[in-house]
Image (cartoon, rainbow, N blue to C red; front, side):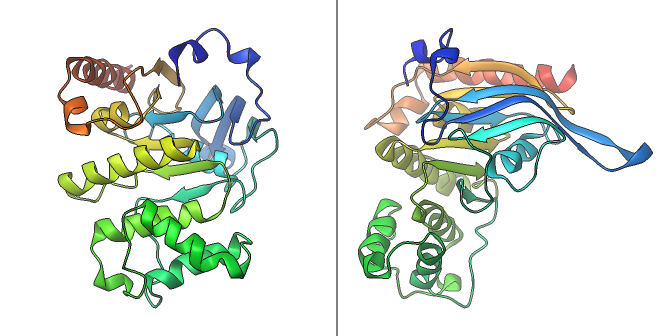
Length: 272
């Protein structure tokens, strides 16, 4: 998304559009009485439809809490969260990818995808076509009959991404989905997710600790302070998107400068 759409004109964006996210003065606390802990807030954040927002910060700054609030898994203590202009509904508002794939091990790849299609309300007659489309989108053609334990960790995470895309909702939430993978697999899946979201136009909110991952994936990066998490930096990313040479992008001067800027902001926010 062009940087002009990210600065100075947010109030003009229609936040009832499919996949848009709006957090108004959101604070979230855990515990009761003298044991109350404020995890995040106050946070005001708007994500236009089609944007790829990356939340980055040190451990414990509230990144995953914000993602759960957007997904509707929890409700904020104060403030409001709106997705496509309405309160988020768990399992309906967004496709969610977690740090571990959370697949059903007794099912095949096809079985895991079909279950997601069923819960998404897709007409059963469309399952074969839709399943083939999803598996092709994440590069897993020909794996339908394989069991979960017969495919690699990276392939399992690709199945999890395909499952999250099964529901034809316009928002995708990803909570450190590549953290446990080796460096090569992580880079390949970063490229896959970037390509899929660019081609489908889905809004994405991605959580990571990594400045490099944030710069590669995001069209916008928000750095959070240490707990309670608030916005320390809101940075539009103007690197090229679409069909690009990923390796060339990763070694470019612009990429290195942005990575350094985000890394410095994360360290400063954690130390403040």
